[in-house]
Length: 173
Ligand code: PRP
Ligand code: ADE
Image (cartoon, rainbow, N blue to C red; front, side, top):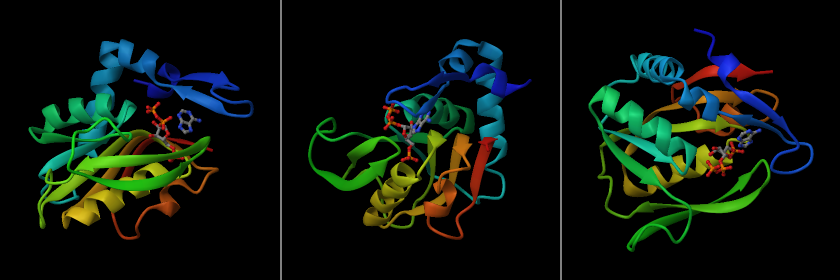
């Protein structure tokens, strides 16, 4: 199954010069969605034992929740500001097209627990790196990262903490 054919390329969205990768056709295709989750799950072998999937709002919720169910793990959301009730931990970050902040429920993770951070796409890597910082604030450990798409012409995975396994299904040159 060629997952790439299920990603729609949209020029100049949400801003001029951005080639947006729209994963909604993949989600709409039951086989494509299933294969993507199976391939993301296969990438976790070698990451050691994992306690939770941490999914990043909002597209990371869709993939992360499905992957958590597939792996029999719980799901922990990392959200845009003002969405989670207090107490929360916060971290600011830069986007390919803007700046934002992410939050994690303060007591969602405990020291020593191991998580897999999941998102649909890694561009500058700012979002995933900020999520790793949030996990680190709790004393939990990032056991791995998983993405559907990496934009290899941006810093992406190089912006992530060194030495942590990263699994990507589609690398866009
Ligand atoms: C997109 C994407 C990643 C992030 C990647 O999310 O889903 O989370 O950008 O960019 P980066 O690697 O440069 O940080 P966006 O903030 O657009 O939110 P959305 O998922 O709610 O659309
Ligand atoms: N998030 C950051 N850059 C993106 C892109 N080019 N397509 C889809 N989501 C993105």
